[in-house]
Every structure is written in structure tokens, then in C-alpha cells.
Length: 380
Image (cartoon, rainbow, N blue to C red; front, side, top):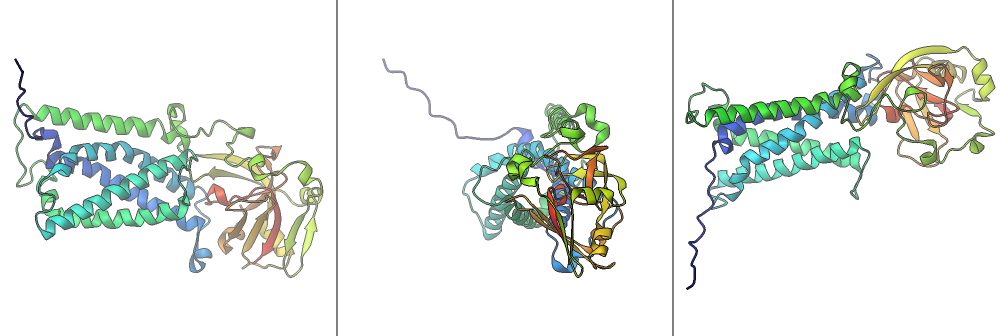
């Protein structure tokens, strides 16, 4: 006797948690996270790669400005990860809609969603891996991440325009056209949204401590901990990675190029007037920490070389390779009294990993532009 099984029923999605109302509520959380991440990311990009017209207009204060904007960038990006996953889970049944295209408007909607999802997944997860300094892809992270950010913004605006009527109908609890939930399903949605909110809050609280000192005790899962590192400060690029050794520094001299060029030994630098500032080192990966830096004002070195009060600076590291081996500093940063060619960190001589014998420290600058192992300073 052969047992015949009935045919499988067609795939249907009837759970209320997959409906438009739930998707809209998640979107109200995900949208602001994406917009904050985008805005602060653009700030970071232009601080690192300013166009010529902007170079002399970038402000050097507030001194901790980059610490705040980049901290928000990484925190909002990390918060967007669970929100994006939940959003995709809520709307994934629509991927199985049949027929796949019903009208020109529906085609536009599906194209906008495809671009939006692809851009969001690529942007969020490449950004997350960047916080770990892990780049398992063949393209340059910075230009691709920046370009995809604009693609994500454009596809998001297109999606909002196409879905505008539906979003308005479900935006608030009392909006006209909102479908009422059966009484038995309402608690499920509330619990689901409460769980999502708790998850996002937990992820944020346990990672934001890398840039918010007050949350340091809760910094359990952040990619980096600012509490660990030589001389009380983390290191991203080590001297070994830069191929800088004590032996290669045996005959080190600082060359200052300008109308009146000159060179200085380390002892001669130490004999110049020293200034101490407390400034944060804030890295693009999101971590930051304040420290005491002691050294010679960059503007004094430029002025001695004939630079004057309007001079920019070009800084060249002795490291053999590196995307930021040569760094240009706009007028406001170069002339700021807090911008130092630092020789000491927290009262101690710079360690080799922190840029011995001399490094740049300046207010409101990304960590990649706080050049280490400085060998040449040029008046521009």
C-alpha cells in the first residue's frame, strides 16, 4: 500500500508582524539612524579629504568636534545593523510576490527597493568591518564607502517618494487607513517592538563607550577599547607596520622647508619653547580618548621658516608607505595655537608606536591626519 501525501500548500505569509504597520514603525527608527550616519560620514570624509576650496575653511574648533561627529557616525551605524536586519525580516515576504512586476509604478518600486537593500547592506557591513580594520574585499574602502553612501541616500529618498502614501497611512497609531490588529495579535507586536528597541539600546550602550567616556564601564563589545594601549592610548598603525625602527631614526633630523629652510635635531627641538595641550585622539573607527601632549607649536616652526600667519602646512612622515604618509593642513589648523609637533605624551617621551621622535597633534582632526614619525614640515 503506497502512502500518498497531499501536495504542499502554497506559501502564504499571514503573520501580522510582516505587515506594513510594523515595517513603518521599524522604518521610523532605522531612517534617523541612517540619516545621522550619512551626515556625520560626510563630515568625516571632508575633514579627511577636503577639496581645495574648503581646505582653509575647515574649523579647528571645537577641539573635540571630530570626536563627537565620528562617535555618532559609528554608534548610529552599529545601531542600524539590528534595525536593518529586523526591517528586512519584516518585509521579506514581499520578495515572493507574484507576479514580480504588475505595472510601471510597481517596477519602479521594486527597483528602488533592490537598490536600497543592496546599498544599505553593503554600506552598513563594510562600515562595521572597518571598525575592526578588516578589509576582505579588493576595492578601496574610503571611496567606495563614500560613493555607496550617496547611492543609499538617493535610493532611500526614491523609496520614500514611491511609498509615501502607504507610509503616511501607517505612520501613527491613529492615522486614517491604518489597519486595526486583532486583539490577540496586538500584544505580539508590542512585545516584538519592545524587544527590538531593547536590542538596539543594548548594542549601543555596550559599544558607544569607545567614544563616550561616561559609558566606558559598559564598553563590552566595542571593536576597540580606549583604555588599552601603550602610554594609556590605543595604537592603530604600529611602527612595525610602518617599517620604522630605532635604527632608522639614528640620524633623524626635522627638515622645515620654506623661504628660510632649516633643520633641527631632536635635542634642538626639545630646547625650543614647549607647550602642553589636552586633546583627544579620535579615529575613524569610532574610538577616541583625550591625552596630554607636549611639544612645539607648528605655527612657530612655520613662521621661523618664513611662512607667516597665512601659511598652510604639508607634513611628511618618514614611514615608507601609507595612504596618509603625506598630510596637508589648512590654514586654520596650521595656525591654531593648540596644533603641536608633539614630543611627549602624558608626560613621557613618545613611544615608537606613538610616533617617536615627533608627531602631529591638532584639534578637531581625524586620527589618520595626526601624522606620526614626522620627518619633514613644509610651508605651503
